[in-house]
Image 1 (cartoon, rainbow, N blue to C red):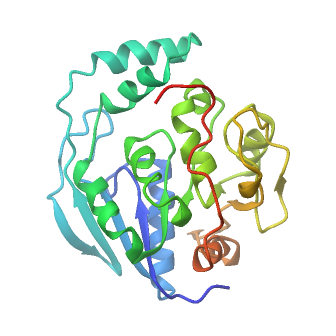
Image 2 (cartoon, one colour; image 1 turned 180 degrees about the horizontal axis):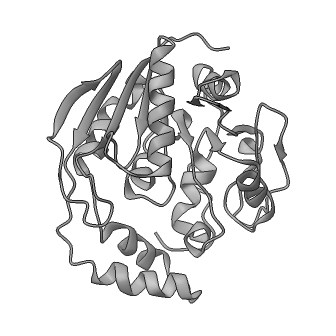
Image 3 (cartoon, rainbow, N blue to C red; image 1 turned 60 degrees about the vertical axis):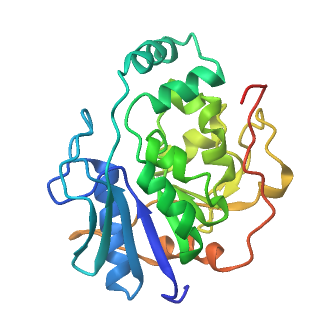
Length: 265
């Protein structure tokens, strides 16, 4: 089991006791669980409470929540959203979108420039950065800053956005993948997705991921974690969860940050 040495950063799109969201709840429980075990834990998140408007609700800046340090950054929602609506319709209908359209789609909603710049300047301060879910701007943008320190909790579903080239670097570039259930891990292992071949440390092997996106052999044996162990009193940080931090304490592997199919930039 890794020693509680170094700072861990969690990057949920929203955070707070009055925030409703399954992924946000899991990341919050994990953050407090690790802090209770002696880790230094930061939550790097937005000032938003509502996931529809992304309006700034909480004050920007640093605060504490128990043993956890919370750093909030203001959202920018100054684009009209028309491109996101149009391109999102294309994606959901199966008509697809070019990589340029995908980039416009992900940016024509909330953006959190302060968060991005903070992680860019301070990524080396963290032993690991734990991000999720995959589809949010916060995960998409931050995951590509320090992939060798990034653990992605994708919250993967069989849905059209999961197959976009836009998200390929998030999956194939991250140091590890954290699956929350067996069905999610099985989906990643059987679907023609860009969740590159990873293997967890608990024995579940997702070694036959489809290699349609040119994933280099150098990253085919990185770890993936699944199954947050639960007790009757709720989620707890057990040895299986703690093992995801061990790879981040050793020399980073030689990995590719990009395994995108086709052209476009």
